[in-house]
Length: 150
Image (cartoon, rainbow, N blue to C red; front, side, top):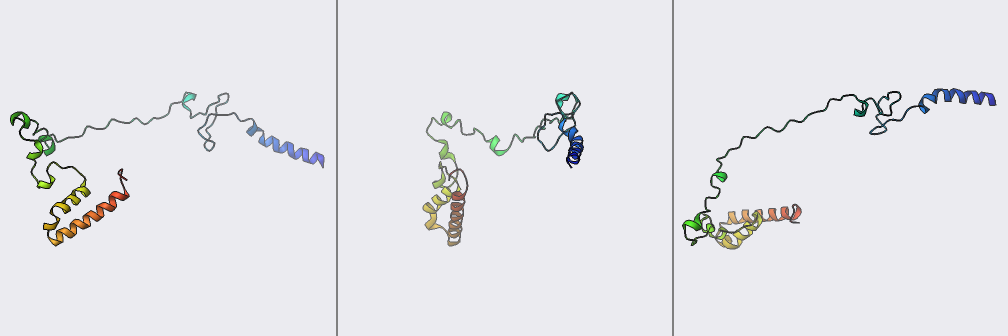
């Protein structure tokens, strides 16, 4: 019986011997093993083995066609000389055409709608006033749920 167990053990070891003698390799993970050259500790697919691999070369982006005469670019700096020509009597914010309550004022859409409601809300038509209130409610929810201002 003992001889039979030893014979079975030798047979199993004979099959597993190549696995035990397998050379170690440099690999990214245990799942994908590349073939190993005898005597070299690196896989055949490794750039260290001296084999060339196809590398994808990125091309630089193509230059964009830019319209140099958009309204914003064409009117850039248009009020810069107001102080020089007007003897500094008029401020550029006074040249902006728009409602009195918006001239020279800054803010986001929610703040602008709230300001409009405070200033001219009592003179608005009912339907416009209702739409303004709906817009304020929507923007209030949106600003409170998302964004860097939370």
